[in-house]
Length: 109
Image 1 (spheres, rainbow, N blue to C red):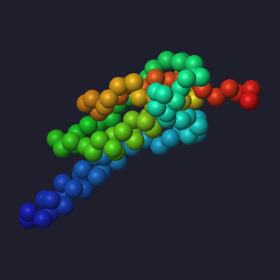
Image 2 (cartoon, helix red, strand yellow):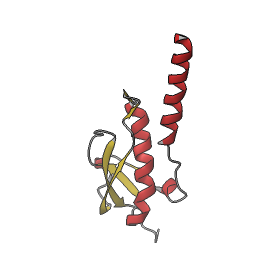
Image 3 (cartoon, helix red, strand yellow):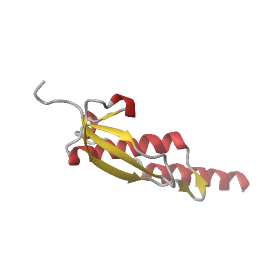
Image 4 (cartoon, one colour):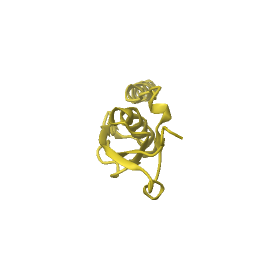
């Protein structure tokens, strides 16, 4: 009985965590993730705040997984601000993170 309950809970956690996964959009695939020191010649276009679940059934999620998901969501929103690059502007807190959006690539080149 204990094994069945553990298996059921494991399945629910995996299923629930899959619900927050978002694929990269076509435009999002072209958006780069850079560090602050790499954006010297870029133009700031704005900022975006994205969020994912930080806990599933009361269990905290892996920070690396959340980081990937948050970057993916921010990359998907950057083209809406005419940006092609994102830079983390805050740490992850409660499953939420803010990113600055920049335009770094000159379309004329």
